[in-house]
Structure formats: structure tokens, C-alpha cells
Length: 363
Image (cartoon, rainbow, N blue to C red):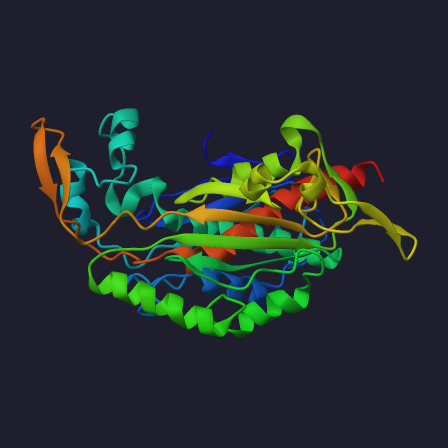
């Protein structure tokens, strides 16, 4: 199934954007762990829609209801199931999408795959709405990792070509993550954040949208997590990160910039520090051969502009087999990058915990 992920921690996501509820089933969580429900709620708020003028007007509380998997507030070994009720769906806004697909969206490919049986309302199960249950699973995995001294944080790297400061790849810490949260708008540099907000509002005023990039870091990882080839850390992270709609690219460490460097420039020499082997740089982003090096793990993702825009666009009528002009209705984000930030953290947390449980088996 396209909605399942994981080797040790297995997650399955269910629901559609406008179905009665959406949710997640998480199997393989360590038993005896007591999730902090307030911290879970706070994490969900970071992703929730309808909070300000920068996002969609659709308001959802995203209140998490735990259906099973806890006894006396602690994980009991049974799969943990959680759901979120959809309370503010306007399905009528999507009636014309059944026949005239949105450029840049999955409407056409979904039609070809499911023969017109797909749910088009709000994008169905292709919607970014399904990142809410992903965030439930990720927030819980994140709490478990924090108990082990492993912290995960992300920020907007860029929006509409406007760049934020970057994490220091050698000494990124939980304090950097706290600074992002304290800013409200998830950036390190508040001045850059104001410019990004202005660019988002300018695109919104024109009925258009903008994209950007998100940078994520994982700290506190020992050397040795991951495997060569198909179960490498890059593989595990990339697979689940691409489950976030609108992600179009991912790079680790220097990423594509490494292609323009010589080996003598890109290699990170080793040295001893306080009795521990470290690298002098972190161009490798904390991963070598699919296995963590003990340095901070860093990656960046590219987020495309929201495809549902209010400008007229050329499309086709699939029932008439003729060209058509589409005017999108409904409530849509002029930029989703700020709401993608917690989703990327959630995806990273699930992938890292999955690998951490492998690592612990051999220790």
C-alpha cells in the first residue's frame, strides 16, 4: 500500500481530505512509553490550517483522539491508532475538478489510475491534509527519540528565492530548534522571515503561489545507524519525506553543490577530539555509506508552489476531450512551506526511530 511505511515502526495512514476523519495506525512503538499529549497538541498546532493570512482559510482544530494502543496513558505493545475529525470541509468547491484537472496537481494522474472513482474533494488522499496523521506519528516518535538524547528540528531555508540563515552543520543544537519555535514564523533570521511573509502575501494578492525549501537537522545521533544500499539513512528518510505532497527534491549535506567540487574540497578529514573520532567539516551531512557518522545529520527538501491557484489556467475537459479553461475555487494556501516544516520533522523522526531500533538490537 502507498500509505504504509517502516521496518520496525510501521505506520499506515487512512482517510481523505474531506472524509469524516483521517488518522494513523502505528505498530512497533516501544512499550511503556507515555506520550506527552500537550506536546503532541502543540506540535499539531504548528501544521494546522487556518491560523493566519499566510495560509488557507479552512480552519481545523486537528484535535487528536487516541483510539487504541495506550493503557494508563502508556504504550502497551498493541498498535496505536489515532484519528482527527474533519469539521470544516466544503466539498462543493471541487465539483468542476472531476472533469477539468488542475495543472500541477494529481487530479489527472489520479483519474488515470482510478478511472474516475477517486475522491476529488480537497484532493482526496492526495491532499496535504493527510500530513496531519503523519505528524501524529512523527510527534510521538520525536518524543521517544528525545528521551534518548536525539533532537530533530527544521526551519524554512528559503521562500520565493529569499534565504534564511542556515544551521551550522558542525554545531547545530536543540537551542537552534528552540530559536526557530520562538520566532513563530519558522526561520532563524526574523528579518528574512518578514521578507518571506511579504512575498507570500504578494503572491496571494495576485491569485498565485510560491514555493521554497526546508532545512532539517538531527542531533545526538551516534555513529552506526543505517545500512548500506537500500536501507541507508538517506533511503529511509527520502522515502517517507516524499510521502509529503509537494516535495520535489531532497539533498543531504552539500548535496548537489558537491558535484561542482573536487574530492579534496568535498572530503571531510577526520581528527580526534576529546577521545572521539570526528570530522573537520560536515559536507557529508552526517551520513557516509548510508550510515550515520556521529556528526549532525542535515538535509534539505524542495517544496513546489501550491498548484491550486486562483489565476485562470489552461486545462482540458476529460469528458469532452477538448481544451478548457479552469478557474479553481475553494480555500488554498498561497505557500505551504511554513506548514511543511513540522511535517519534515515528523518524517525524519519516524525514519530515525525506525533505524534507531535496528541499531539498539545490536547493542
